[in-house]
Length: 233
Image 1 (spheres, rainbow, N blue to C red):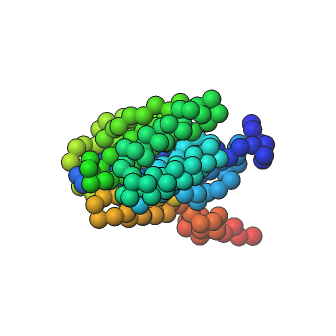
Image 2 (cartoon, rainbow, N blue to C red; image 1 turned 180 degrees about the vertical axis):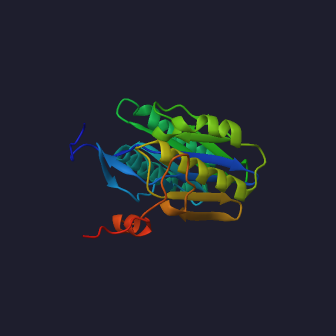
Image 3 (spheres, rainbow, N blue to C red; image 1 turned 135 degrees about the horizontal axis):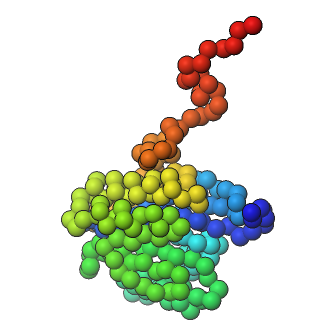
């Protein structure tokens, strides 16, 4: 068991990006771990890169944060030089370039999602090593192993905004139920022609899967809800 409190922070994570008819929905859990310890149970793994493009981060928290910072810096220069915002494809390829050029030092996987007036809603997966893939949906992180069959069954083209958000929340909650490195709350970001909407789903509002127990605030709640009578002398 790794109990080193000085171990690098790792987002053993579930991240998801889904396109729908008119936009994209990005989703992620909120658990950041250090070895076997939960360093942050409410972290935000969906980071803004431009007004219309966000990135979901998994792997090493330090690596994904510094790459996001560099991308924002270069995109700011790009916007000033061109006089207009960068497209989603430009942002994704910049993420890919930094990931590939530093692939021997970076331990991270990213999902870039956004909307622009040229190609509409787009999702790009940039896994470990710096490959770039444009997909109708993308999943990543340690929790993704439990979601491939779920998405094969549930994802479909032409979904509405509400259907896409419901799918993302259900998928992240399923990964939280099965993956010990995923947990906390579910955050979503919806991006379309009208702008960006952020949503937040607490753990006790998520659907329960299989043999999961109902959420309890404390041991006293469990005792008070039981039908056992106190012992008499």
